[in-house]
Length: 458
Image (cartoon, rainbow, N blue to C red; front, side):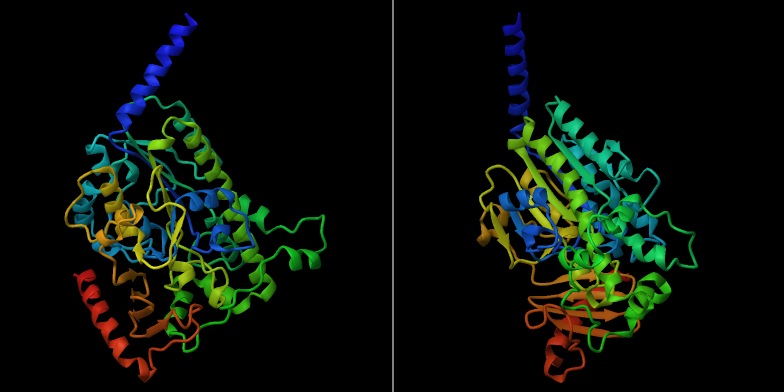
């Protein structure tokens, strides 16, 4: 009897694996407010992220991955639709949206596309997707496994992977909240007058606390990250940056009033919150590894935007500086040809390029009007088949930005400009927009950017 049960179980398992060999499962892990440098695999010695690192060391990590808009809701709209946020008139979280455009775009969102292709689609954690109260279902995901964004989300994900016995492939999108809790450090110290008092998350209070077992001097010396090399504001910084005073007063209040110790403690807490979400990610990855789906699952790890973390005396996101706009992007699946690699050359738009890439890898037809570029050839080590992105556009509530090979040009709504040479100035300390030696390069980038702005404002 026992032997028969074992044989039956093995047959069922083989049936699941055989059915799933036709199409890969997809696991998307998205953190909130994590910039590209916030992994020990990226060279950061002030935190320990063994689970992110394990994935990065197995797969392909992209160093030049950028969001379409460095704020939560616009960025997430792009990730799950493959469209610029401006397609629905969205420049910030509270934008008045073009509902007709949303209704036209959403039927072709990632969730709908993969559901129609025979996938079971699951979503968990933070949504913050524009377009309705039931946005997860609206965007095509069949099952919302958990509204929790922390430990419970990890536990529900583990249960799903451990107990699943369907023969259909799955798409599972997990959205963890941290290290986003760092937002509340400036908000609690400089509460805005135009909004109700914020409830400070307990994990932030725990992350900012100095342990009783060590003196404050030793703690600051041994455990607290130093100020970033680009701590000071950019020379000839556009006045548009100070428009944040009206939009997000706490950001400029922190710039004007925090001490160097305050900034370092902010950075310390940010690192601890990133370690916290790494543990949650580890729970999910361990469950996947122990499941029968491990050999047939594409794993994506990224974030919706970054965090300034003291660079240019700024905290939060929104701005186009690298710390805010550049995010981690790691892809791994069993048998991937270009594994255990780092791509420091190709520019990837996570919001535009991830969706077509997943369709490409899964053999799923995607909407033909999407502006993104599949980077699947890079994963397959077929670089000759890849059409590299020459330019990347970005939007926010202050203006628009274009990035080319190593130049970034920003045109703000108030007419201010910024031109940065990332090759010579990776910390973005010198604004070259008024330097006549760069007149032609600026004109070239400005012309390209203005075409994008015209399209965005239609």
